[in-house]
Amino acid sequence: MQFTEQVARFRDYMPTEDRETFLRLVGRIAAEPEGAGSHLTYTTDTVTRSVWEDHVMVQYVVTSFYVVFIELDVYDASRGFNEV
Image (cartoon, one colour):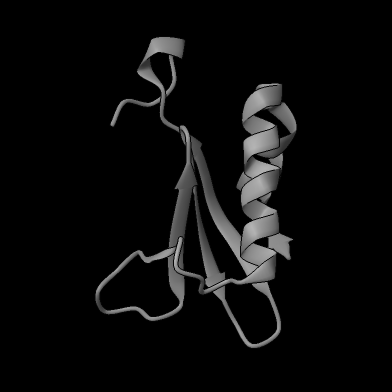
């Protein structure tokens, strides 16, 4: 697993319960990067995937050597986070 600088910074500063959700997602992705719970992010791209749980969403790229997390976000307008 590798994280972009943006993801690593957000991970370090996000609320505790969201961080726990994120770490659960990381565990799921580590076990099966192209699992049934993930979705292709773009129709013309077969390596960029996304997955979400509760209000936490991550996008990642699956390569032959690594899974690289490229985006992490929280969508929960009631707590002041991005609105979907």
